[in-house]
Length: 99
Image (cartoon, rainbow, N blue to C red; front, side, top):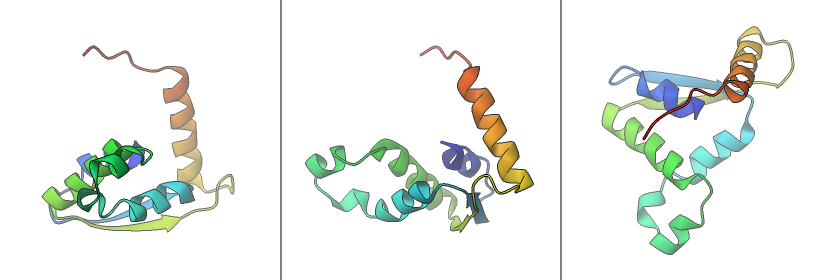
């Protein structure tokens, strides 16, 4: 979700580098590049398919160039520690939404 949020505020034609400690997020991104060309049955079996589709849609519409940089978790990286802290706060104090 953090990747999607970052992309939503990215400028058109931006060159975006996403720093993450989640290898799973990086792998999911790369595996989901061709989601539009698979069958609906197979699409529905993919974890986070809607999130991945949304991310690729934003990249395409904003004409973004995306790269990932893997950072080591719990290694004292100041920005990664801040992101982890904010994620924990968000998890514990979710903002209620009305649909």
